[in-house]
Image 1 (cartoon, rainbow, N blue to C red):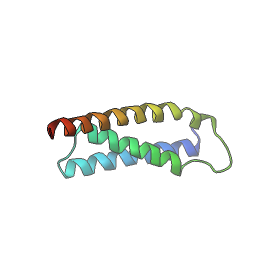
Image 2: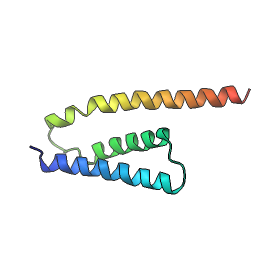
Image 3: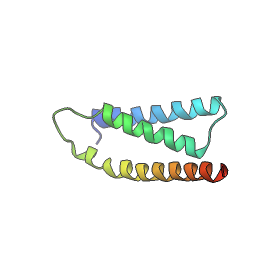
Image 4: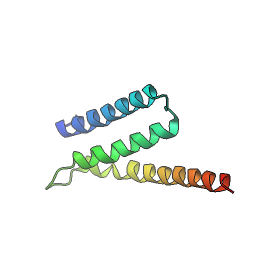
Length: 90
């Protein structure tokens, strides 16, 4: 059974992702990399905005692993893009 906070989090994340994919598609920039980056930023923002102030909820602790995995993938994407730019400029 989901709580109202869980539904708020889920609707916020889904709304962010659908809006971001729609905007990326409308400006003809929809790639898997951009979709991932925007979705990861959305996950971080929605997590921060829906966090309770004075309590730690059990289901929110499980968000740590998707955030860590997303951060690692983000670092790899930035590293690959940076290496491409450095190698391409030589």
